[in-house]
Length: 407
Length: 78
Image (cartoon, rainbow over all chains, first blue to last red; front, side, top):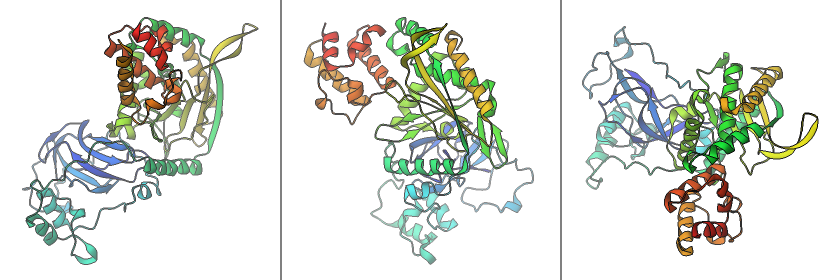
């Protein structure tokens, strides 16, 4: 059995509240399957499991778990069946020596959580309420949330007797399982605190350096105008798609800026998974990953961005989208400011920014002409790279935008 | 489409995009993108929904006319 743990959905998360199971004990789960919904400051997140096997020992709904705490156990394909479910779990020493190596949470290298992060944001202790193991097991069988039960044990711990008492209580609702919380967005105040924690850590730990370049957007704009004139509204593209694709292509050329800084230094990302910064109505920001953006066609990338914006705003982001970003890309849009000097989202090592595309004077072949320009910026981690490398990334993005038909 | 029908359609679509926005406070000539803080993606989604619900072809070149209530009434009513 291996634990299916509460994922770290970004550097600013310390705990998550389990609000829905999409599987039942004993169900077969496959890698990438959405098995649970966890409530965080980013709203309700669909949590994927990257294990392959039979899931069991589901933690009760309503439990708030620290990052890394087991939410369930998965018996992987080929593993011998465990003892009867009600029996106490065998001691580790008794486990067969052939137990598989602990799984690498595929595609989900959990970044270290921010120490002072979500604990305050949630207004709860980072650990679960004190519940005896026997009580927790029995509560799980009964579908009760043990942390919410009246406690009579030492130091206010919930005991087995408390669970039995709660189960036997006649006025208990017909269905003991708490109804899943309504799917919702996020709490702006909590999100603000979580952003504050992550950005404070960034500014404290990351020695940022900044570069900027004015990029001629005329070729890209002309290509975009032609495309949009020939397509239905639902198939039209926004400038942001070209900017994101050009960024992803350039990162493939300069991979030293695509990845994470952890205790062992720079770790390259397994693919180009840019976090696309999305402003949320009501305040707040989330930058979920678009996986392998460098390999998506422009229409596919546009579809991915529309889908992501929709889910970011209504709830329903997936856990891998919050754990996987290897870099952040932010575009201020048509009504935004002229340029943005970003703050790196740890443990990433770079953030690429685009201001509003605006018509400005530009010199072409010795003459001043009116030209749509965009200010491209980079904030990068000096521990991982120098301005020379950052300049190569900006140059690669600029080149890509001059040849939009090859994007 | 008649004007009341157009206004009701626009209100309905915008409520889905900017739920907290109050269209009653927006003047007929105000730019909806400014007044309701719609970004490019929001506005594109609005145009997509308008095309679907009204059954009209909306060429890209016409979308600038859809940014105000007066423009919308004129375009969809014409």
